[in-house]
Length: 239
Length: 179
Image 1 (cartoon, rainbow over the protein chains, first blue to last red):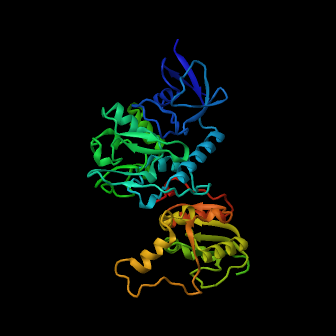
Image 2 (cartoon, rainbow over the protein chains, first blue to last red; image 1 turned 30 degrees about the horizontal axis):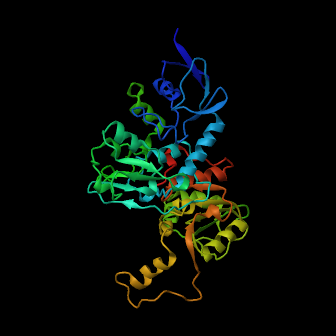
Image 3 (spheres, helix red, strand yellow; image 1 turned 120 degrees about the vertical axis):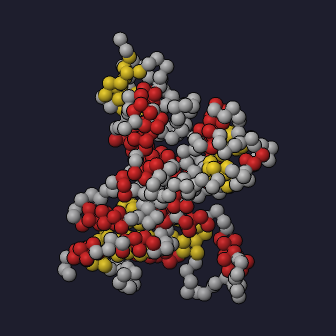
């Protein structure tokens, strides 16, 4: 007999070792997430995928599925929490979508659209952050980094390098690169690295590619992130 | 004229792009003015708003006058709406926030390329600049937000018709854009 969990009352099978996120995605159920990509070790840091498991809040991307779990995903309270988390991500950085080349292709923006986030609610931090444009082909705009560590994991797990890391704590947390000078140009990063393609925001960009697709024709301009996520991260559940 | 809904609009630290986009409702403006009367607005040239139903605010606050105007709107509008990216998060003008004000002024009026007769404007009539550009929800209570740079004409239309016809305003996915 196969094991199952329920998500919002729907019975979903899972295999031993799968997380709630794995089981949900395999069954075509979208749980909002930013720091998670199925091909990398889950990190559980963005907390957008917070679901209620038997009444307790857990990160779906790290929490193992177990037989008989009763999972709430689309509860009003959770959706409100996710909106607040997204608003906090926006006010903690400098996210000026009209002047960002990632707009329309940005997962942070797309999650916000998906949650119908119309305002920032909180006071804005306007933190002082730098841009590292030292590398010929790749740039880092620290203003847009949400510390999801996808680039850190992609560099280690896919590219066989160790270009990125997160340093500092709390408000002083920031992305660093593996070079004595602290500059991207002195690392072994390459524009074709997975680490340069995986950024969910406009923090890591490959130069001279930002406007190849016009605004208005971009990934999330007409499709919601739930649809895109389920079809690209788990192709068998595409439309 | 009697029972028309009174709407006031203004642009604070904005570029009037949101107002231009509002005008892009085109011939629907004729339908709108059947039920709406414009109070203080660049459209009417009325200087101060009084007893309005809806106030539309474009732009964030970058100087003392912006703050006064914003408070006048809050005191006189039943419903106050943040219109566009700058009103919501400061937008493009807020990109000066991590540069000290003195450096901004020096660059613009003293040291910048092509500056003639360099002097920092100090006429008593000029409102004082704030050290940072801030979004309007940090200054007064805002009831609704219309994101976009600018929000499209359809956003204005959907929002205003919802409100005028007594529905809770809502924007469907296609109308929510931050760019």
